[in-house]
Image (cartoon, rainbow, N blue to C red; front, side):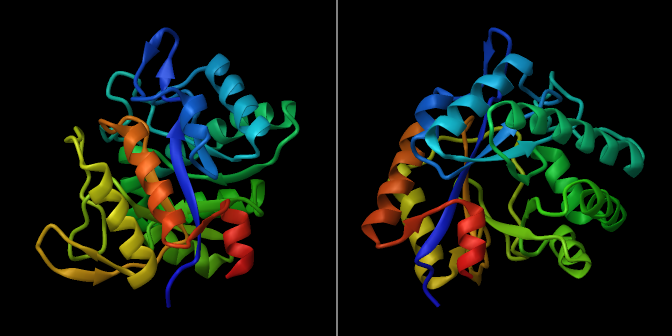
Length: 260
């Protein structure tokens, strides 16, 4: 069935002090999206950036999510840190709590949590880590959506436990035949219009072309693009325009889930 309502999310606040990683300013990207994943200090971000992005999101009515990563500023959270699952879950809860306080300061609620980079992929395939994370979120944030891939272990574990999930489609990442994204440490430049067509097709046909050259079915409620992808502003602009032109309305994850 064609999808006529979808969330559009992007990772924001991914800088540190005077160092800037994003390809476009956060305030510009916020005008394109319905949900923001805000870096929480471990892979990028700092308290001043978190406060600023939360304030800007609140002013624009963009839903807010915590984007916790591995404790890896130097590697931008794209290197796997070997640690016990309990330690990693505690790191996630710590980061989530930090962003929640900034959200409270600006009078908004935390809509979701979405692990970043290598941590996202680690949680996606590790059942023990997923189980511990879901158990922790059910106690601390049972109303908070967990963003994940439809084919991930995380999605299966969360749904079985009754934690609400939002499944993602990755606009600026390749897929393999398993339905998982192909993890990339460095991104090549992409054609914004081609990315937009990929997103529209996924919404209308529920299919995506894989790196193996096959078409597979894909299930999702939210489309993600990354602020550090080369040409991120042009990509986000093209996706938004393509969705609207195709008659697909953009709304935050809570609204999309409520309409499902």
